[in-house]
Image (cartoon, rainbow over all chains, first blue to last red; front, side):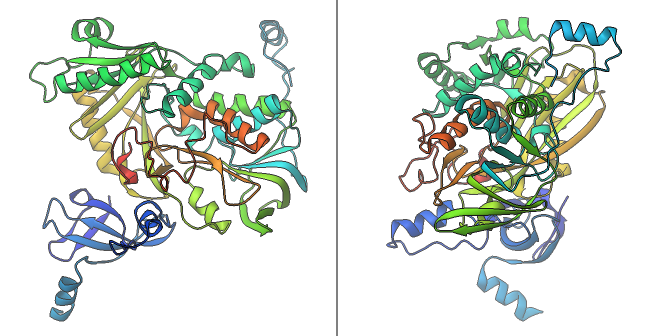
Length: 94
Length: 423
């Protein structure tokens, strides 16, 4: 069982969360060339080691989170809100 | 190599089993091979065998970083079927099933292929209609042994399922493929290894590829833990680790993520279940059969997050146990003997890749998702054909890396481009 420290709810079992995917993927502009969209939708780095990925706390606050995790050891290094404004507000409050 | 014949089995029995030769050699790697296959799983071994048998090549090596049969070859739930409805898949898996039907004779090795039928339970009128559409498609396109069973026929065949009318998902019928079944996974790896070795293929275990040298749009050499090996042609068959090798060759990203899939086996029981039974409903996913040794072999969903770790997580153990109890309540007091996990290539559309690559002498076999075990004979057959002839046969032409650029997805499940959903 992974334990994910949700910044809003506290540390919870990963079964409360839903894995999104590779958090480094950014979507291109709507009028970007087809190849850019192909690459963003279909191609993945598939890192063995530290990667940033998205999780949603579906059985909790329902917020999307960015989790930095090792895909071999499953060690979790950091968790922050995926929404940059919320992440900034939490940092300012600390 | 001593062949397995009735006479040899009898004679060795009379003479203390002392006359058997080893099943395959343990050669030192040579400096050069015409074809080097990276990955000594079922797909790599089958490819080597068919390259030697059907295409007459002899100077072939299979490099395996661990031992053969130690990766996903030995971590699956051994189910063989061909009930696919998508064009491309259905012809490919039907060809594979036909190869399975003669595999023990072909390899002179008993792979214990048992065509005990594959029964997918259906739980709503809508599910029955959808299955009827799929299975009618199969009947019209070369897989004639697919049937829809009503409840009375199903109850006669498998009387001990949970048929309670007030179950959360009451059983209403089943989609059945009668020629489907199971095989002994270790025996398939050993059988292909032994038969390939007898044709001169070098099977080199404990040989990990650490580096890939490129020049002029080709792979020029592989740096391995047992020395530098040059090759005329290089073939990757390393599902689970494909992205790592792909990036080692400097080729960038693939439409693949590595996920882990668990399997379970119980303590051995007297004969209980003479079919493969599959339950998939409302988020639950469960498949079970009984091995010849008596253990109940079963599995469920992926672990739901990307991982290269060959160990499973506990929420899935609970999910699978709950599904087992809802379908076969008689298993409630059976002890779990072992569970394990393998790392699988989950592709963006749930289908595989057997194709040429951006490098002239590199060929790719990858992306087997949940389906690699049943596919291995046809995978080896067509991958060997691709390597020997340097062009994709029509059977595998749809399964290239460019299909997403063409707007084509071979998405049996209709789940869309999210690797973890193609279970």
